[in-house]
Amino acid sequence: MEKILVIGAARSGIAAARIAKNLGAEVVLSDVKENLDVQVPGVEIRLGKQTDELLRGVDKIIVSPAVPIKIPLLKTAAAKNIPIISEVELAYNLAKSPICAVTGTNGKTTTVTLLGLLLKTAFDKVGVGGNISVPLSEVALEIGAGGCIAAEISSYQMEATKNFRPHVSAILNVTPDHLKRHGSMEVYQLMKEKIFSQQTAEDFLVLNYDDKRTRDMIERAACRVLYFSRQVELSEGAFVKNNRLVIKFNGERHDLCTVDELGIKGGHNVENALAASLIAFLAGAKADKIAGVLKTFQGVEHRIEFVRELDGVKYYNDSKATNTDSAIKALETFAGHILLIAGGDDKGTDLADFLRLVKERVDYLILVGDAAARFKSCAIENNFPAEKILEAGYSMQRAVDLAKEISRPPQVVLLSPACASFDMYSDFEERGRDFKRIVHEL
Image (cartoon, rainbow, N blue to C red; front, side):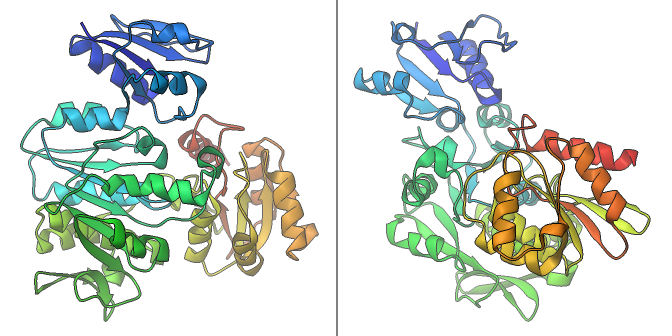
């Protein structure tokens, strides 16, 4: 009987442990956190300090995305030639339907959610999973053969992959993020590029022509590459022409819908719609069916999500903005008069471009969490008025109360933190839902 060690007892790790057990393996699930309430039938749970003793008799290790590949236990395992794979690779090994995999710094969740809907116009069975909340291995088993899978893939998930090969892959953009984990932009980009490293001439790679880092990836791809662009008319790929989204492929032009007809608004969402449409088209969806979905799709929770209007002031939840580039896209959606709630678990990235737009469009900056002190200092250095910076400590309630107290029409209140959530919440979803609860209770 094969013995498998699963490291990381979060959602993906628990799914991997359950699946490995059901496939007949002896499974141990380990996590360094001692206070977790984890139970998986038939699986041995080992919490707390991870010593080399865990490796005794182990034939394979499956790593959760949150676990860095460079931890001592995994270094020892590699030295012992114990195979190490990610939960995403497990999913690929189990999948009997083609995978359309999307990565990038920003826009992944919106693009993959939309992609799932587009694929449903061409396939009876469609699964959506990965970094988007449902473990990809569970989705692969559920869909089986004869369907298609839309997968959101993070750089964390690619660290321990070797053979992962989607039929269609896409990289939406690459901007500074997760540098604490990966150490440099070069390594971070390399993790993104692993998504197409195993693809062949039978597969497709979709890249953002408007992003220089992604545009140049064609030089390292062995598969067929197509671009999408919001700024340039392409000879092949997806682009905007005369305010209309268009796909050109194998010499044929397919008109989709106008930018104004899109159900999701903002320039970044035009890019997301172009990417999702091109991926779905390459997977087998028809242009007329794609157009119908584009007109009705209203976006995803926590991404510039309208919450309510109170006393003429609109409140928006953009908790998904866990980095400055994503927050910039949210700020660009509004003409100005923004009361911005920002801050959280600081990723330490440069704030210059973000604060330049804050100075241009934000009336008041309300700061929360660990990042508050650095954000305030940098904002003042970038000539944002100190008297228009308010601090709410570690209280979302206080931040919303401050916003309500000072806001007046036509201002909008926007939660777009430009930070991770882990100083106050378990994830950005919990942060966003807490914000919405507070706003609805005003």
